[in-house]
Image (cartoon, rainbow, N blue to C red; front, side, top):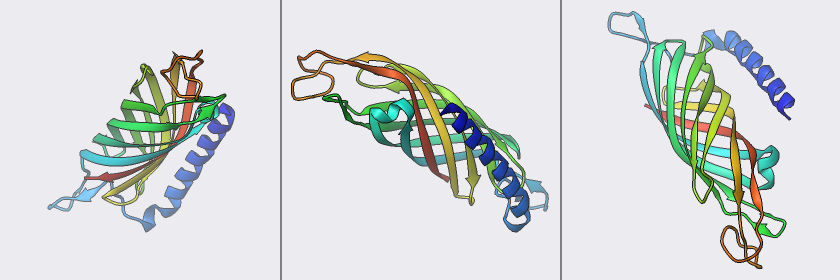
Length: 206
């Protein structure tokens, strides 16, 4: 699975670079604006509000079916082709029933820092992030990381497809005979390990 994801990522990056080369002259560059004197300039501080549907893959998909979240983000551009990002949000993954155990929702508050590398013409970019995910209901704090390909479609809309991973420490659970999640009186199980998702970030920038 990891090799497949790497191959998909490399292929997608190559396709993105090729696409931006072919279309740079056909679309505006949203990283650059013209000031009153007619000189090229770029917006240094960009805020965003994003919705984030998320699809669990690998081991995590056996415990959760889907996730949805939201983020508040800030980007500071040190040049027209490079930006530093900060994102804080909340995301919840719906728990599945597995081996008679009904898992509660997996709720996290991720705090992530990263870097964006714009490929030139248009708004295509590569984005890498890392940080901490603060979980509820005994999930604890975990190290999160991810990378994706994005496109600033307009001055107000930004979309990014990305891979996100984190290591969830083992959480011991007890459950009732009816299959309730954490809590109850029956013998428990445990869950944890490496969790992975494919996310679509849809952001409104200002």
